Length: 390
Figure (cartoon, rainbow, N blue to C red):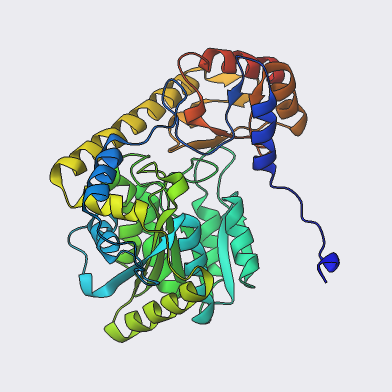
């Protein structure tokens, strides 16, 4: 029967990784892979994670199953950072998921069971968002997320919501938009929150990069503003980036409701879906996060490391923005964007030229990983960009 399967296209980013690894040039630049890199091009394990892992090795006395909910100490330790210390704890409950991807898939499946027929989503978006929605069998309705000036298109969201209602869900990035780096401003979130409430749609908030934009508190502004206005919402969270736990797949799914019965229904459905999907989430990374958040010294160490990451990416953005214009490409918007990613308006031919002639690798969409640039290669990148954009 397997011969009836149709071959599927290879993942473009994975193919790009192979091409980069095979390139013998010493000055090649990888702007494709979506991980943080230091000024020397490394993706290190956080010192706070190393310390927590050492403690875990010494104290963990069993590898027995935790159940579909995962490490609830981890899930609950994140709540004040995500929702704020003043949030009504009775309205929210969560469970562990394998990475932010698992959390998004769980949120989408719970939304489907709740009766959601359509998911509204700004584009461009993380490619896996559309794949997850399609795999769940839900209709995807898209609207533009970025204006020609490189800011968030609030009017497009308003138009989409104006045509939405019961049975619809709207998926929003909490901060550090992937792939554009274009976030809604606080003033825009102040408009979005009551609009979501008035349209009676279900918000699904994907918070995958908290702390990498303007700081842990500032990056949660939009999510908290929405949750203060709507009776219910779903949240997908990732620790893969802000704790550097990419390969350990550390995420969490949360439901926010207006009463205990609805919360129980959401979580029992989440547990049922998780049991049939991955049975139990991986424990090690989540346990390390729990240890960090339960120790004041380790928490301070982690936040300091996160500050360093954010400061480095801001320095790169400031240098790119200082270039003003590289040919017809306006670089200034990169300075007000956030997180790991931005999109450059390059043609496929220009992207191929950057790769073949200059050893610069980026996604076919023009998305670049800001953290792939360093003081040692940023001028090389700007000059190569100037050459192809002329």
